[in-house]
Length: 272
Length: 289
Image (cartoon, rainbow over all chains, first blue to last red; front, side):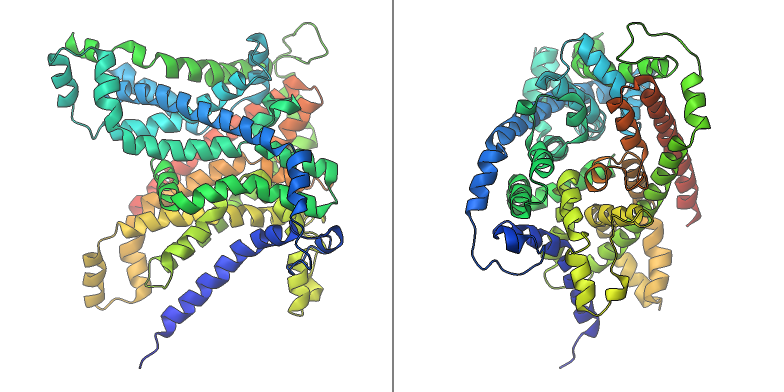
């Protein structure tokens, strides 16, 4: 029997690579269940006593439920707003003819490259009285993710035949009905793609939230870690438990939807 | 007439309003504010021309932040894409548990940069698992204080960024590789080419557009980096890892609004220019291969 040395070597390299990814995560998992003295060693040993109570402390002290609730609120609203406004805009931009329409497309496209101007944004939100409010954060994140959304979705709209719109119009449907009842349902695959990456970006956002939200009761889940580390910096078992609790929702979603997430994020960036 | 009735203007109103008000307006007003003495401690905003820029360009902090941003972005872009291609080529061969490995390599991309930052402050801690591992294999001589040493910190953090994002480049390149038809590869094999010849003359020309996108994405992304630096070093030790976005955040915290906004304008222009140059350069590269 012939052994394929190449395949063995490749598998070995892949295993080595995976270890580099997995070990830091394993460190967090094990560390979160250790006693203070053991956790302070920062090593990969198994805990001598499994301290599940660390999680209880973190849940109460880190106000994780509050953070979770806020994160869900911000993420869901951002996705809904971006997909809603973005799909309408994408439909218009890839259907309507005219030179100004293509300029408008470039105008949106520019938003994918240039970094936002944070300090003037805060000033604007203050004068609109939405600074420090969820609505300010959600609108800001939506503005940030709209360009990529429009880019991906207009690529998809182009694959739908124009005859659909014409048929609907001839049958007496208004533009509102044509878009929401005929076109929107057909956009499902691109809606899935866009939802995947906006959810991940919005859920993980820290920088923008740091600028915009100052009230600690409104902080999203990543802020729990930020707050916790500055408060309990050296009580490693709690830091570990908090890090894992913050990662967990994402990891669970990834476990079940990994194929769609990888495809969604890849499509998102290939077309971006 | 029917055309306008089918695609009426109200369709773009919500997106245009959000984008114009929350993104475009602050950017444009930022250009104006960068020419003033705006600060939260003053009642009026006075126009001062290019004073803020003069100050920015005549003192060292911004140059240092810009230098670090460029070093960071170039290293991350090169390593992330290099590793991405290698992993994608590896995943594109017959290998057991391919889907498992692909999922594992991609996993860090879904984590918050904040969480990754804190995780690696622990891993790279002087008594953390990296040094424990080096001790274990008898390399105690190269154990370092990875993020506490000003000479090393920036490079250590590029390593963390590569850890997080190599999987995303891999996924991109893998999608590109899977678009290459088997017939082409087989034809090249029959023609008696070696593996590296096939890589150079069959795979590379097809993969070139993907390289452009992937390089562009990692370049833009790493020039805007903030969370990873903020959580691991906060720009320290002694400013050794200060990048543009942490620099801007510090000016914001210190109430130097106009100064910070001017720095933001510099970042804005740099990112735009780098992207345009890169697109041009890569397009030329695409036709050359």
